[in-house]
Image (cartoon, rainbow, N blue to C red; front, side, top):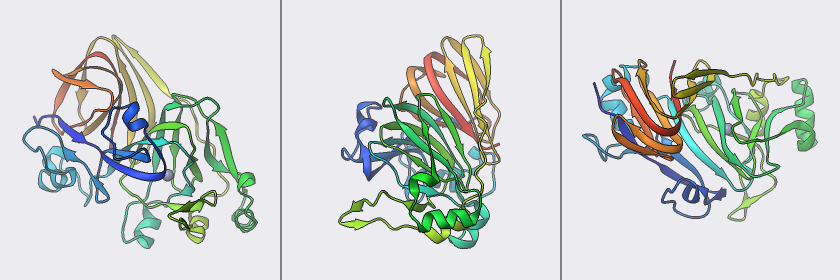
Amino acid sequence: MGNMILLEPVFKEVLWGGSKLNTVFGYDIPSDHTGEGWVISAHKSGDCRIAAGEYKGHTLSWLWDSHRELFGNLPGEVFPLLVKIIDAKDHLSIQVHPDDAYAAANENGSLGKTECWYVLDCEPDSTIVVGHNAKTKEELKQMIDDRRWMDLIKIRPLHKGDFFQINPGTVHAIRGGSLILEIQQSSDITYRLYDYDRLQNGQPRELHLAKSIDVITCPYEEQSQEHETVDGEGFQAEKMVKCPFYSVTKVHVTKKVSFEQDQPFLMLSIIDGEGTIDGTAVKKGMNLILPCGYGTYTVEGDVEFMVSGVN
Ligand code: ZN
């Protein structure tokens, strides 16, 4: 059985970022415009280093390439998933992502991007964009041509604890005042549809209207918000999503509970509280991987964490 793999985040400074990754999670961030912590990532744009143990200092991509047995000998050139914490002080651009087939054909063989969001916290009266109102591609093109952004997008109220699955082809945007845990395919292919006419270093950021129109699904189909909850002895587990790329469960342990790691690998992101996992102290902001064959893991304390992995 391999040991647990603790990871160090990589931070991204962006025009819409803030300082909550420091004030809420205690991370040592580069500036008060830090928008993203890539907390479990082997992506070439932000490859996490292993924080402790025999692989300390190596990157997660190195571990994937060199010790595939820790990941159940899964096939694939790249570690398939990416977990981020997003501090949106200001709005992110309105965007859409391609699926695997479109990305493979148009983006040098990259993965597509299916993503999901768990709202860790948000300011009162926060909103989020998920979906659009165009019934056909023709109507979509017309609304984009006419720059009728507010008619096009579906703006929804946002609450702490909300969860959204964002399939490829879904128009979406995280908006200012929200702190979000994102679990996604390991891809950074984003087609920007509208950026609120903002400037970065005096220039507007590039838009990708043709590709956006190519990939946006018309009409938008509402996603169910129903989650199955399991109440166990000393814990509660909420199954947030299971899709072809990942499954995500939120677990709140309040005593001492043992779980089984029977997947190729499991990613744990501690989102609140503190305690221990198999005797290792854990607290909010820590992220780790339990490798293949890890077996039983025992969590003790008052700990809330997201468990995610491939199916
Ligand atoms: Zn996105």
